[in-house]
Image (cartoon, rainbow, N blue to C red; front, side, top):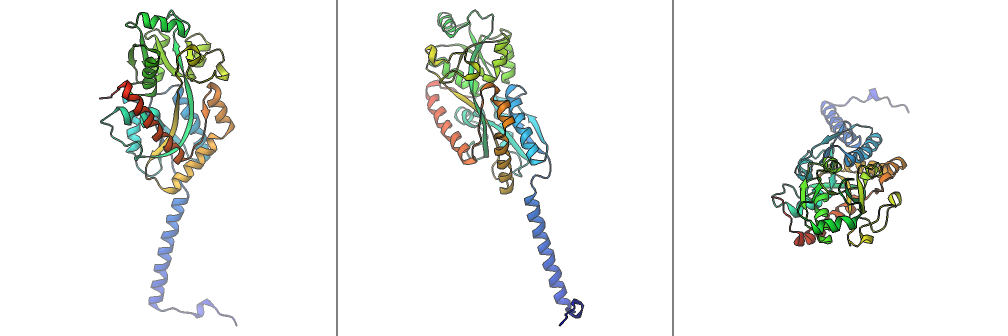
Length: 332
């Protein structure tokens, strides 16, 4: 038996019900498609420090993530207030998945401990994505400082503490806090000269405006060129790519520390955006070219889950809070 559709002629109510059903179904399909195709436009990435060595590493990771997502990632350097300005802007950004940011020890760990007027909650206002990499510091000086070894520096600093100065990338940054911790461990009292970023601080170190700086291992090329002199590294053992630089520990100063850089978004972004970002960052951080580029100075590239990253931040806040009972640092 053949049944032709045109043999069935519905009543007016049936037609209206059918049209309404199609409209609702179309709306649902459109909503599902909108959620599934993230991202559909460019993503903004807030970097809370000026251009320089660390900024270039963040850009390497961002470029790979952009390639994987099929959308450009526009990098916006928003430095100031020891990285708290850019971190605050990230916390206050729209929760749509189209703003991501670099998150560091300074913004997520140091600031909650040191700044009583902080305008964000590091454990509530961010959706942590992943750690990007961790690395060590080099205690460096300039060629005309008059000391080429840690022993020389310690002797001079203890004999004439007044005139000696150390620089950092800004008040409350990891460069600053770990430098203060190192000076206390070594029994020193030097004048702190904060800058607006590590690049400028390191530049003035090379020029002799300051005497020492606890800078990133990314400064090693300048050491190799004779622009800076490495006095020690904050690792437990000598690093493979700079075996000529002794650790601080082996020179009698019991001090080892790492710094890190990671990525986050404002809390509350759509689940599909979070899943897509996590997948892209995981692939990017496990790609050989990113590992090779960032590992050139000994940086350890590592993906972590959002839960692992958040737990690490929470643990380090406790460590710095305990440390600061001795250092007594405060940002007004």
